[in-house]
Length: 207
Image (cartoon, rainbow, N blue to C red):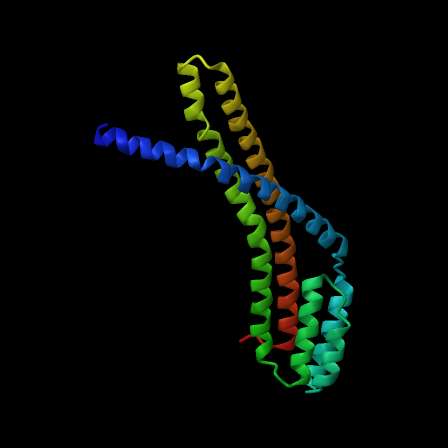
């Protein structure tokens, strides 16, 4: 066996050995994408943006902050009833106000921005990795399929083509779910960050 043949054989063996890990990971990604759909629907059901409530609470909090009545300002922030991230931020900001740590609230907003980014990472990874693995699952069986075709083995050809098409469909399915959820959540979190920035402007913690 020549050096070139040995190298090509190693490449073929390595690529063929990747088929089962790719298929297993694709199945796990499909299951994970279905779990993400459930989380998405649960989050959608809990979203409640009340602009009048936000403006009223922030206006009251602004007056108390201007009067250096941080305890009353904290109480106003606790009355904020918005989407989960905004409400959670308002409560955390209220705790900082009670401890007279106004300057640290901007740092707190950055922490919430990181939390939102982490939630988007999940669906982004699914949207990016799933089609890649689907393509790998498509290409890997083509080698054995071509060998089967050259040897006249129709059964081997059909089985490998079936695997190739199935992995393509599964990868695109999971990737589509991840992409759609990423786009919708991105809009949600932009809106939430806009509301958090409004609270920050109210407390005058921005430089």
